[in-house]
Length: 608
Image (tube, rainbow, N blue to C red; front, side, top):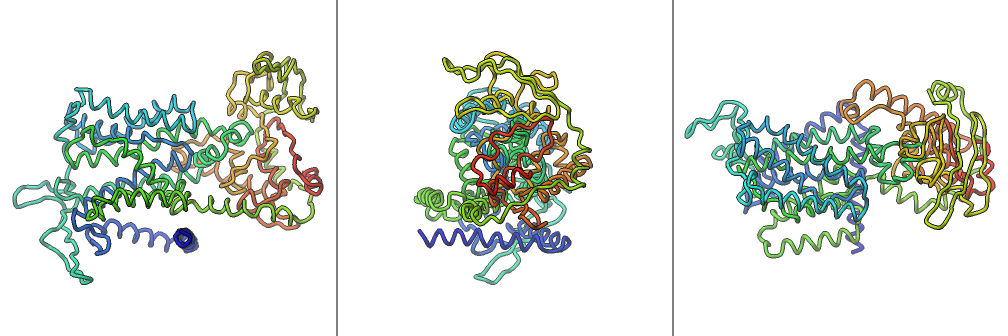
C-alpha cells in the first residue's frame, strides 16, 4: 500500500509539473497546444489506439459514454467540489433533461432536437432552483438525504405518470438533424464528407475506408457524431467553468465551502446565499445535454435508465478524480465509465474490482487522483505552520501607503451609527444578554470588557445577525438589523472578525482579501461568464486594492516589499488577522483580535 500511495502522489506531482510548464509558455504556444490537445480527443474514436480500444463493444459508443460521464462530473464538481454540498440526487436532473427532450420531440410535440435542447436545459435549471429552495436550509447529511429523495421522486413520477409514458417510457425520440445533405438510402448516407477510421495490425496502422464515419450524420449505428457533440459541450462548459471559477462567484463557492459562518457575517462576502443558489441551478444546466443526447441516439427514454446507482457513480466520479479540480472530475468520470467497458471479459468480477479500487482510493488517497493543487498546498503548509510561526522575524509596524489611503478615501462607504437598544437574548431559561444598551458614534472606538462567559461574543453575534434577540433592537444608521439576514447586514457596512482566526485555507492570501471586497460588488454570474466590461473593471479594482493592502499589511514578510505568501496559513497569527480586516466598512467589530498572540505579535498588531 505504501508503494501505491507513493505512486498516487507521484501522479499528482507530475500533473503539477505539467500545469506549471504549460502556464509558463507564451500565449500563442499555449493556444496551439490546446487546439492540438482538443483535436486529438476529437479524433480518438477514429484513431482507436490498441491499448485503449474496446474489442467487445463499439469504441465510439464507449467514448460517447465517457464524454457524457465527464460532462456530468464537471457539473457535479461545482456542487461538491466548489460549493461543498453533497448532492446524491443528480440522476433526477439527468432524467428531467431526457424526458423534457422526449416530450417536446416525440411524446407531445415534434420539435427538432437542437430546438428542444435549450428548452430542456431551461426546464432542468428551473428544477434545480425548485430543489434548491428547501435544500438551502439544510447541510451535511440532511442535504444528502433530501437530494437522495429528490432523485427517487423523479424516477417514481416518470414511472407512474401516463402523460410521460409511464413504465414504457417515451419512444421514437428523433435523432438530431444531420448537418449537411440529408441521407438518401441506400446509396447516399448524407453528411458533408466521410472520415475513414484507423485499423491496427499489431502496432502497424492502416486506413479503413470500408467503415467510414459520415461527418455530423446522427443515426443509430454510429456513435462518433454524438461523441463529437458531447465533447463540444464539454469544452464549452470547461471554458465557462474556468471563467466563473476565477471570479467573484467562484470565490463565493470556495469561501462558502471552507467556512460558511465566516463567509457571511464577517464582512468578507454575501455569498453563501447567492453562491448556494447558483450552485443549484448551474450544474443541472450542464447535465442536461449529457442525457438528452443519449436519449436521442437510443430514440427512447425509460424510467429504468435512471436508477439510484447512477447517482452514486456520478458522486464516485468526482471523488475519484479529485473534488474541486475540473480536470480531476473529467478523469474520474472517464475512469468510471471506461474501465467497466474496457474489461468486459471479466464481466463477472468487474464490479467487485471496481468497488475494491474505490475502497483503496478512499483509504489511501481520500483527496482523489488529481486533487486541487491549492488543497495539497494548504495541507502541506498546515503541517509546517508551527515551525513557521516559531521562526517569524521581529515585528514591523503596519503603515498604509499614500496610494492605499487614496484608494480607501475613494471608496464610497456608508457613514454609520450603531445603536444597541435594550437588547435581551435568552436561550431557554438562560439569559445570555440582559438589557444591553449602548451607542457607537462615528469615529468612536468602543471596547466591551468582561470575563469569560460574560456575553461579549454573543453581543457581537446579535449585532451581526447570527442570533435574533429575544427583545430589543439593533440599528445601524437608523436601519433595524434584528430581522435582517447576515449578508445584508454586511452590505450595510457592519463587519466582524471571530475570536478564533477564520481563514479560507485553500485560497491564497490575495483571494482571502479579495473576498472581502466582493460583498459590495454588483458583478453576477453572467458578467463573470461573458467577461463583461463591468466584470473586468470590478475585478481589476478589487485585485489592485487587495494587492495594495496585502503588500502593506504584516501579511508580507517583515523588512521586505515582496508579495504576501501564497497560502494564508503560512503567516503567523499576527499576520493572519489583518486578512479579514481588509474590507472597508462603516463599523468593524473585532472579537479578541490579539487572542493567542505572543508579545512580538501583539506589538505588530498594535502597529496595525
